[in-house]
Length: 149
Image 1 (cartoon, rainbow, N blue to C red):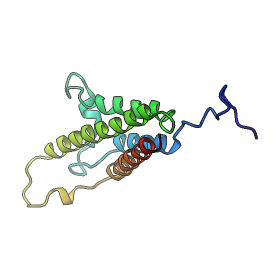
Image 2: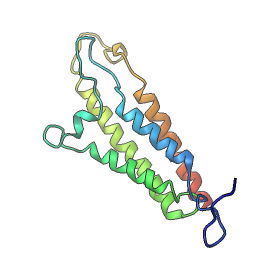
Image 3: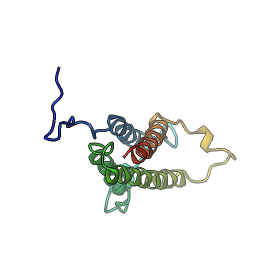
């Protein structure tokens, strides 16, 4: 199998960072998966969807999706273009900040409970761990690409 070469003789995929793209997809899946629910009776699982609505949630979680889009686009040049790697790093940090705000808002919606450790009783899903792994991988990969470029 031969690689497709550009005019300069380099592989056209030389700048593509598959690990960065994988990390971004992990973040997206973790962000979209349910994080926790208040009780077995509740059907709504708190996640960024509640805050995406412009009418009821202010739309501020849409910034998370915008940062993830930047990370996806820049992953195609991050290994060879330092500006793309820096944009990916900024997108990773922006995603981290906005996702933390959404998670904090979700925890704030739990409300007061009778016992001292009500958060420990919540049934957690796989969303938060996937999002955490993806965020760490995206930021680490972007830092690597900045150093390489």
